[in-house]
Length: 403
Image (cartoon, rainbow, N blue to C red; front, side):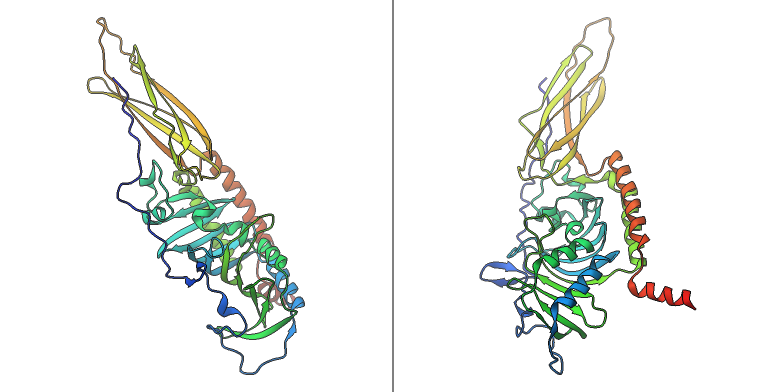
C-alpha cells in the first residue's frame, strides 16, 4: 500500500494580522517611534525648568555616566523598541538585562504581550498563538506554540536584549555615537532634574540624572551594537538594577531553563518536507520511512534540532513506531530515516497492508544544550554578583563597616 504522509500545511483562513499602530506615530516615511518632540523646542511631556540654567560641558557628564553604566551588574529598561528606523513594528518593552546578556521581561506587539528570556545567547518567547501568527510563523508543531516557551530569532523578538542592552555593550554603543553639541542643558524629565545631551545624528539624545550622574533615558534612532551593521530604534528609560533584582533575574531564568525549556519548540526555521517522504516494507513486515527536511521558509536563522516520529499501523497486527532526529541549518536540508520490524513468524505466508504516518517537530533546547546552558548561567550569576550591589549600596556598606 502506498505510504500515507500526514504533513501540516499553512492554516487555512488564518491570515497574518497586520501591524497595528497603537504605540506608533505616523510620518511621511511610514510608522516609527516619534522622537521629534525630544528635540530642543519640540514640546512633548517634558516641562522646561522654571529658570533657564547655564549650559554645562557635555563630554565630562557623558564620560562619567557611560563609565557608570558599563559597571552596572544589570539594568532595567522600559519603553519602546522598533526593529529598525521607520519600522511599523514598534514594541512596548520592559526588561531586566544583566552584564552577561541574560535577560527577562516582556514585549508587547500589536497589543499582544509576550514573555521573553535570553539565556546563554539563546532567545525564548512565551506568548499566545496570535503573537506567532503576527510573526508569519508556520511550523509542523505550531499547535504546541500557544502559551509555551518557543526559541525565537532576533527578528521575531524584535531585537536581542543580550547584545543590545547588556550594560557594557550599551555603554560602548552609546559612546560610539559621539556628541552633536558640546553643551548639556538642564531639563525637567518627568519631575526629575536631568541634563539633556544632544548626540550626533538627527534625533539621538540622552538624559543624565543631575543628582546621580546616571543615564536616565535614551532616544536613539539606530542603536548599533559593537561589530554589528545595524540595530534597533529605541526610546527607553534606564535604571541600575539592585542586587535583589539581579538575583531574581538569574533565579527565574535558571528555573525556567531547568523546568521548561527542554519541552520548548523552535520557530527560527520553518520546517517542512522537501518533496514527499517514502515508505518501503519487506517481509516481517519490516518497514522503513525516509524523507528530506528543508528550510521551507527560506529566511530562517541558526540551526534547529528536528525530530521525526513515525507510526506504522495495521488493523490486525497493530502499530510500530520509530524516530530519527538531526540538526537542520538555515537554508539547507536534512535527511531523516527510521524503521520498525513487526517480525511476525507464521507457517503460512500472509500479506499485511501497512499504513505510515510521520510527524515533524522541533526542539528549542536538547538535554545536552540544557546542561551547557545551566552551567553557563550559574557561572554568569556568580560573576555578576561578585561585583554586586549598586554604588549607593556599596557606600552604605562601607559606612556601616567603618562604624
